[in-house]
Image (cartoon, rainbow, N blue to C red):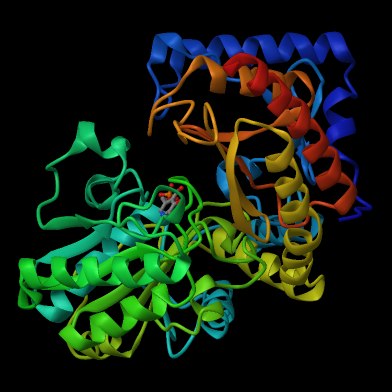
Length: 462
Ligand code: PLP
């Protein structure tokens, strides 16, 4: 979005390229000496220094501008340094920088109203957290206490966060090293037609068989032991597998039949990513609990939460909820959320993201899939797309194992960065997940780079 404020990108280089490089070198040296990084072997990583960002771009320590096709961890939904959000945070910092959760605060009240109005059905009360993992932790606790049942069913090929319960909900190899820290989680298979484990050949078959499978798991585990089915509306980091039409509604119906609560994790899918406020609303499904984070305030200040429906809300009407966080509903984070949601509404960010998906990203990615022998499938919606890379289209053999890396994927990342694109990759996939506010010209520029990256992948695989 246009800004009258001084550009952070130009400010970063105002001191001159040598000073900027000198300070980037110090940042890097201190990082390597003192910062313990997530998901990494500490001695083997070389994090890129980022000195500034604006809109859809970040600037590295050498002064190079890169097009951010990752939205960081798929959270800067309205781009970097949006002036309205930055101003809202600064204003709030001057007015009231912090206040504990037991007090009522104007920004918290307003953020809760704006979120509640955008969630489907009567998910009218918001429990605020610091991010997505703790939102899922609390959703599980609420579901267990409300139903008095111990188990939670979650999907293989999913990600729900890095804390103890959340990582055990997760259905991919990131869980393995932490397995067993939380009891009572049972995994099931969700629909994924490209690699159907149900031997389905159509979306309708995949949907029907995935629902039959889930019902069998429910029956074999014992419905009276299951508090909730918890799943991502569209699994994100595990592969952006858009479920077939009717799947989410089918899970809702199944949960109702057995008195099980439905928790939909919209941490990655919510707030514009798919061109809608929420996928569940788009699919006509009302969960009992909906978890969110990331795009709620574009990640400018940590914030997440659980939107609570009537069944859980009524359970805790005259019974204390046993849980809380010092920073629940932090005024800086809530001020950022209010400003973000106002920008999204005013600028019709959802409509823009939906149109980009339908008219630019989807068609262009399908053309790339035709042209490149290593593109097995492209799938997605809005600004939420996966390009799945295979050694050949017949065998569909992934170019990297699930949760693992390969020289082909490393080569793809290296090529993208060399051509000025910051990509998001996971296992054998490149995810196309720019900010929802990315312009059509920027989207086309990034897709043209992706074409060249795929040339390199074709070479490396051949
Ligand atoms: N749920 C989903 C679907 C996610 O994609 C993520 C993070 O990527 C999380 C939960 C965890 O969120 P956080 O990292 O804010 O704890």
